[in-house]
Image (tube, rainbow, N blue to C red; front, side, top):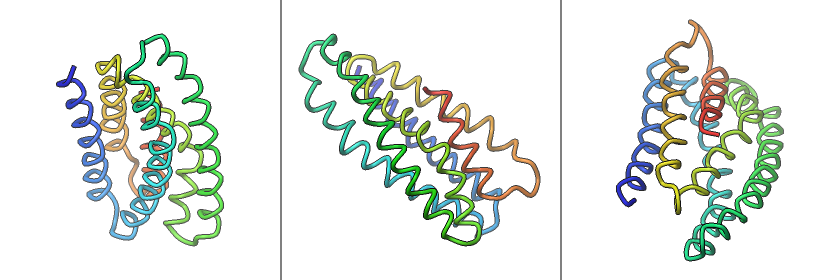
Length: 173
């Protein structure tokens, strides 16, 4: 079980590194900076979701029986979707106000942000009882990223990479 949890954390980190390397090699510096702005926005909203929802689920329910934990998962997912929609609305407003590639990257993040946060919530939901499922969620996202990002058409900008990155998370949902 511990090995699976450690592997899950490793795959999650590897996924972030793979995305950064592919995007850095594919875009000019201003495009990579725009992707970085979208990444920071994602990490801020995901961090809030983890702090408000994921970590409390783990600390409050990890010592309870599986049926009790499973009963809490719909609440986790519902709260996650609510937070994701609020975060997406905020990202959409900032993206609309921010000119240039950074604004376009945020506009690309807004519609896929809920999908990305639901993927992360499933990972938290699985980590206690089903670490292999948590690992599978992250492996699916990594596989999607590795398949989608290198196929970028010539001349696309950070917006395309943000949308592809976010849609790849849907494989883990």
